Length: 100
Image (cartoon, rainbow, N blue to C red; front, top):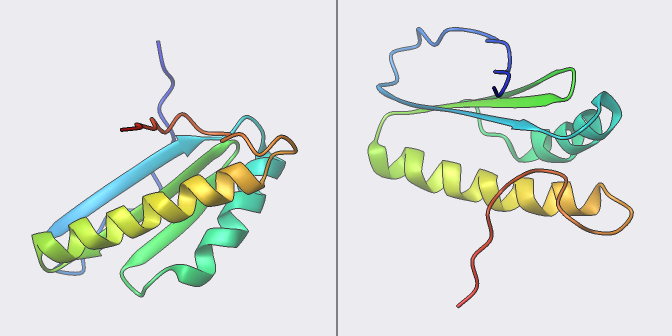
């Protein structure tokens, strides 16, 4: 059974579209390193927190298209940050990668 990351906050700011992305990165040090690399790119509608080895990012946007674009950008940044946080340049998260 997969353990869920702890909840960090409830959105009550009126934004109607929300996403919560939770990823585990093996240990707190790696998770904090990844978070530090992601936070500078966060918009005002995003909040990233660390709970142990769990990285939680909550995104709230007014439109579905805006939410989709923000989540997509975040996931690309997360993949790069996770890869750069390991010595072997392998992703420290379980994001699936597809090749054509």
